[in-house]
Image 1 (tube, rainbow, N blue to C red):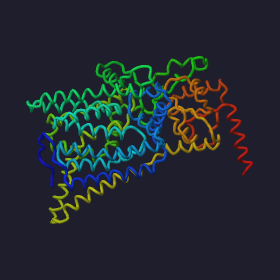
Image 2: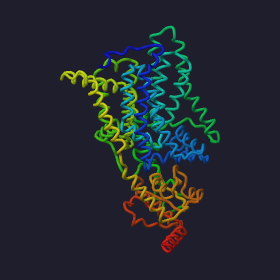
Image 3: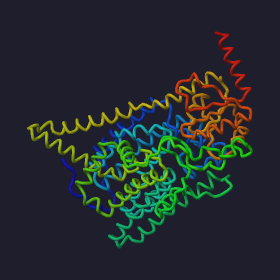
Image 4: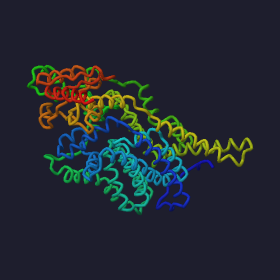
Length: 559
């Protein structure tokens, strides 16, 4: 049966779910959970950003708030990981389990919102696409903030729609809290202010009786964001020496781009790296060192030779298609072309505005900062999921009709369902079969270092060397997250091994760091016999090298 021709705006509570709907929802949750759990169990080395969030959570744990707030400022995700640690759970394992759980549960608010916006069949189709989407499956188990944001964004859309339709105070307050949490998880969450404004306005124009209730409810929704910031300051940041307002760099970047002024790159997490090369520079070197004084003032510049500058439309389109996947993109296009009148309605137009804002923001980031990450595009899926669901139902109805044309009346629905299952299986296999050779290579380098240098080592690493340090020491190393001088970090944590990298960090800066350490009595550890180790430089204290040599000699003697 094809999707309906029109979906009128409805007011009041939605019809309760039937038994069949509950069974379908349970099946979708299971379909979403199984591949995500499988990927989590098979996942080896985590992504670079995962080590960054673990390091930030450790900074919260030890009360180093300046370091914790350096890039993210007010953000709930590292605080959440720190909470897992305080409960006695392994932060990495707990963060991965949390990611799988919240990514699976995202189906519930997404379904609840779409069945009210359109209908239950469109909602089921859209949730099915989310459940089998390779990119969502692959990212879910990573210990990064994205899965948490998906749940908060879907919950915000669900509560915002219900609040405008049902005019209940608790829905407005809940929507405001979800919106505030989403905005302080990923910056795309601020775009939820658009439906928070537009949907009550649509209802306000059509309902004279409830205008005061809508106005007060909308005010309550917006009041939750400053209240959230206040509560974060008086609880999590109660020992901080100043008040924080949140991360505002993206607003400044957008404003500079709009007025056409030169963009000063803010600290940013690049597409495949944890901390940008713009930060990882000589700001960590004491200006007392004459060896590096000639470049000390360039610590906040963009790197001389960035690893990857993505400024063309082709790289933008490739990243978008790879992230959103061709099949969902085609279905979104079918839904948009087949139901253009929905796109022009006021309650749907705001969803198109969110997608346009996300796409524009990614483009601005690419042309100004020269970096792009496919994960940025995933925020478009949720406002466009209704169109994707419509497209999926249309395709299935056409398959069913085509099967009937050949006289196969009984098997028409089965054939359409089988086609959907096959496409879904291909998507799931694509996700679970994903490989990460560069991660495995760095993990192997770390294991080799651990074997050669011996146990009980204390590692200090640049952000892009986190994975090597993690596998060398068997635990998260000390990560240079902010512009604290290198000597201060070495003295504070008594590290005896430093790992630098010269793939993301400009080679000149890496060499300057190494030379500075050598002047302070450190020695370079030779990685010549380690395969594919050209991008890393390891330095140890002189006495540590002697201790490691004696340890290896003892091991050979015992053998």
